[in-house]
Image (cartoon, rainbow over all chains, first blue to last red; front, top):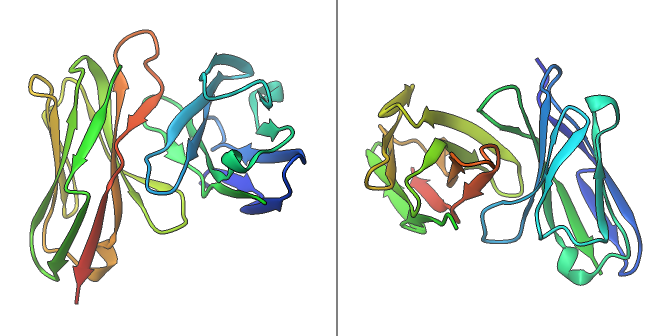
Length: 111
Length: 114
């Protein structure tokens, strides 16, 4: 049973560029979540999918952020016109019922 | 708004010691509580999940308890080892309409010295 995978693991970009992250959940998990974690803080909820439907977006997710989960499988998180404040660890999690399982995260650095 | 607090922020113990990490939450109407471990620069590893109807869960040297009425949970680690060194995060899911998103504390950084 493979766990949640995320790609890339690290991304360095210049301010103003667009970036896209991918998350592959544990197979058969119908729920998928994105969180963001900054240094010294706990992760903060960004968005939630049940199958292909995006059911909630946090107010933390400005209009520069968009997430998709086509066909209810993998998910992508895109950030347009990145800002230095977007630098963080982006974590993906999936679940079948209550227990959420996290991937290794994508660390984004915006220069 | 649910707030989760973890005390202490950091803890250093000698190998072999038993220890307790504390977690408190402001809204007792939770669906479940989950404890995680995070190694530096890594993702989160789920340790234990306690449903709101449960009082405790055990896995190996770990035991987590839940007291909903007082808004508290503890994670007990027996016979600590240097490999237990990591940040331990507590997170809750509310029982309202958004009974899927985790609200996290800031974590407790544990160092177990050989």
